[in-house]
Length: 117
Image 1 (cartoon, rainbow, N blue to C red):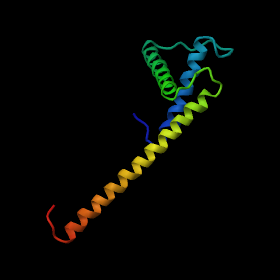
Image 2: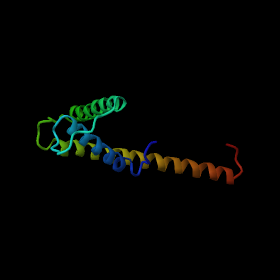
Image 3: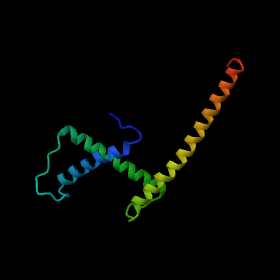
Image 4: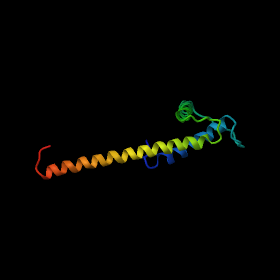
């Protein structure tokens, strides 16, 4: 089931951090006094996809913005890229909404005047 757009990142982040912890425990990166929980074969396929997609996302964003991943501020710079891109998307969305509203109002005016459309 997909997440609602108003909380997709919040919900996904919670699940993602759980997956990261399991992977870290499995490779011995996470200090834990318990034995790591084994990952099923099916879940391993999805872990591979998660790792692949995460890597593609970060490398693609870094390449787009010319960000070096060994830069200590790389995460902040990648986020700034998203913020800037989102501002452009918001502006374009607002413009499309205004154009759609104008077109609806024009159609309504024609209808009120009894014009065919």
